[in-house]
Image (cartoon, rainbow, N blue to C red; front, side, top):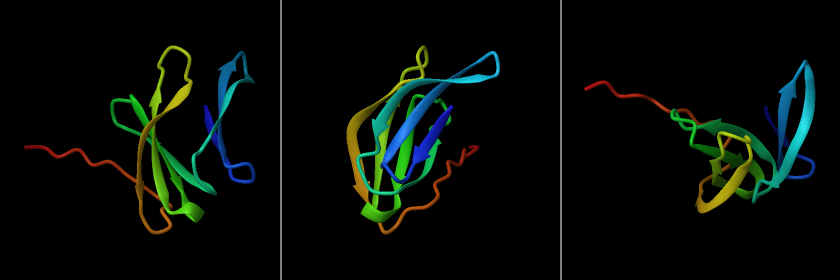
Length: 90
């Protein structure tokens, strides 16, 4: 489970086991006020939208552990608060 912590500008990763949350890691969001997070449809990447620093930052997701690692890719955009993927059918 992933949660954004706006006060500390980080993403917290938890593992759910037997009804309890176990802390896996805390990773800086690389911006201010992480407002929203979403994963790519294949689950390989997570995008964190930092509202007050006007940035979207990409993280790689490790499927085995759930840990996230910054990819170095980010874009600047005005106050991002939501992001969605659309699957186009040809």
